[in-house]
Image (cartoon, one colour):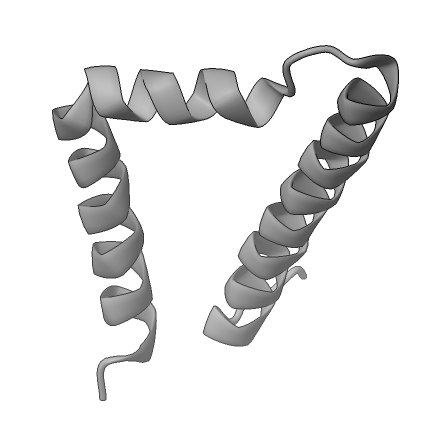
Length: 71
């Protein structure tokens, strides 16, 4: 039977986060090499246009981590 521990969930979240950051860095490197605008400029403008969404994402991540690791 599969048992999911808080450490496994945290490891999965960190792996996904690092993977997304890695893909963004590769995309930015290729865009700068081609002389185009990188996708991080688009993400930055979206986060500035919708600050409540970025706040909700930050609070959700904090609640998840707090739920998993609060003694």
